[in-house]
Each structure stands twice: as structure tokens, then as C-alpha cells.
Length: 123
Image 1 (cartoon, helix red, strand yellow):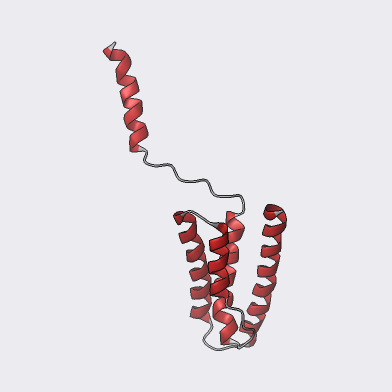
Image 2: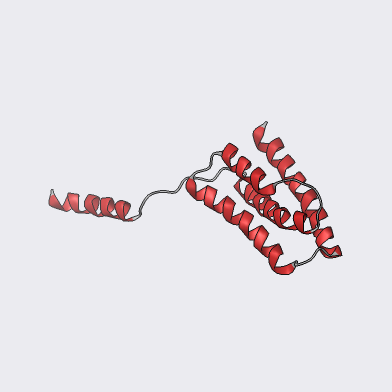
């Protein structure tokens, strides 16, 4: 009887040592992280070039709130936003033609990502 319990006890200990399981990401997580990164970039570039009046940070906060992610996903989305912001803040100190070009491309990409996420996963 004791020989039978040893493998079960070993299995139980292995499962406990594995720790808590992580939640499974939704299928749109990768696109959401890219959208967050793009929005962070826009949050930096738009005021730099004095174009538009969108508050990308507020829109990102609203998007996160509507998605209701767990804490891990919330941190990853916020981190992606911050990565976008920091990446452009290191390279662009003044609005240049390259900054304006990046801004236009990022606005287009944000629109495409938002449309794709909505079309594929919200309808």
C-alpha cells in the first residue's frame, strides 16, 4: 500500500511546486499590445509636432478598462504603451519631416489595428 502512495505523493508535490497557472490570453492580445505601443508613440509624437488633440493616454486607459484584463495583461498593455512612448522620445527631440512621416504611418496603423480587432473579435 505504501509503495502505491509514493508516486501519488510525488505527483502531488510536483503539481504544488509548479505554482499557480496563468490565465490564457485572448486571441487578440498580440494586436492589442501592438495597438498599445502605437498609441504610446502617438502620445509622444502628436504634441511634439503640434497636430491633433487626441489624448492617446486617456484613450488607452479607456481601452484597457473596456477590455477588463487581468493584472498581468493590464501590465503588458501599459508596458507596450510605455515602450512606444519611450522609443520615440529617445529618437525625436524636435518635430522633423521624419517625425511627421512616422506620425502619419502610426495613425494609419492604429486605425487598421483597431478596425481589425473590432471586426474579427467584437462582432
